[in-house]
Image (cartoon, rainbow, N blue to C red):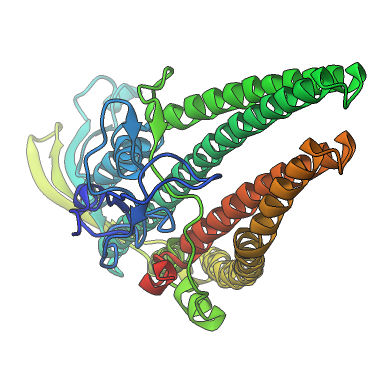
Length: 460
């Protein structure tokens, strides 16, 4: 059964959020005790094209006070992280700029006095000429529309930048969520290592009582058990730190959850790289360049409008004090050679537009390299995790059982027994690291392609 995507509702779109499904399957040795995950269906996200992290399906059941789902973490981050709030202020600033761009040239009221306070007949104000005039500028070349175009395209750039920021923020939530999930598995593994160490200690003590092993081996086993306990405490501290780091994304200094839900070992088949690269071209980061290209085109149009000179006009009334007569006055003026004088500004605007074209190509090349690296590293991590799960760890578990039994019968020494135990724990630790890497690279791919990975990624 599928669950409604509350984060997508917040963004007026749909996304690759996860929903948790209850599972009655017993926990495996290195799996978390939390329920397994089933991925929900999703549409293409309207607002940001993606919410990254589709490789960690969340539970359908609502998160409790002590358990956090990725769905809840993403929602809290979008609602409370301050990094997105700056875009509201920038949008308000653009609204003010649009109001200014829509303004027509201002009218000016002028008062002019001539032929006063002179000598002889022009002394005082008897021969003065007083003029009251109204003047303004008649804009040519559709300059006002060009100014509006600048603001409109600036808003498009802002929207694209917000999408990129949202994508990066949600990607960071997913990465920290995976870190916590992996840390939970590390704690579980540390507990298992501590239990194995204690089990080994008990076996060594029994053999020592029977006189089959020296007391030195008991002391070595005691030291190993103490070291395993210290490792457990260390991993628990690391988990606590990672929880704080995750909660900081929505402004909490003290996490209000005890654990997170997730299946660290859930993978699927690979998606064709060429398909991923095609999707990558729709990444909001590329859309920023497209929006900037339109903005630069608008700036070029505005620069070209300056090549057409505006007409300054004035009209008024002049009074002659000498004979109390009045007359109308009018005039206009315009600068000469405006097109030639403005050629430098047009060249600058064209160069800046062309620079955006080059930056877009460079960005695509860099993103292609990043996608290629993430794609193949994820493929390698999944291969390693599956090999560890299906072949290496089962073989080491069987070997440990046999060596433990043989050690109790005196057929193997303490060193062989401890080495077998450490090999198993090392393999399980490598499994956790490989699984975590696979999920991290998957989240990176989704962030680069601005789309969730194919549903087939989650079918075994």
